[in-house]
Image (cartoon, rainbow, N blue to C red; front, side, top):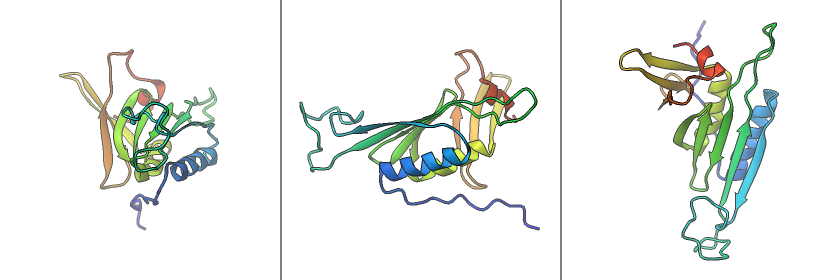
Length: 170
């Protein structure tokens, strides 16, 4: 019997709205609440600082669209029921990339197409910590499949690890 995981699927997410739809459906399948904020127009986008006063469209006439999704952390019940999940925020940009923050650890410049697989990996607990004692160092590793993983340094100066981070193998 083959116990290998299939490689992550990267759906084609041509727009911010399509990514929002996929990520909201993913959270709803897991029974997790999600809140979404949209920033539409050059005057609302975080990366359009050069937009003129009262400009809504870019110079080429396009209407930029960014979104911020937030999924609150959930804790397991004392009897062991329910799953422990981290606080997640996903910031989707018009340029096709995303920033995902997991319990204070920010993964910068992920491809928008990788965001569903990234969240699935978090929910399926395919994440672990890589720690060293000297020098003290901690890195969060999220494995999408056997070949692709994302790694980011965990900031330890702000009160240590969250409950979810502490529950990860490492």
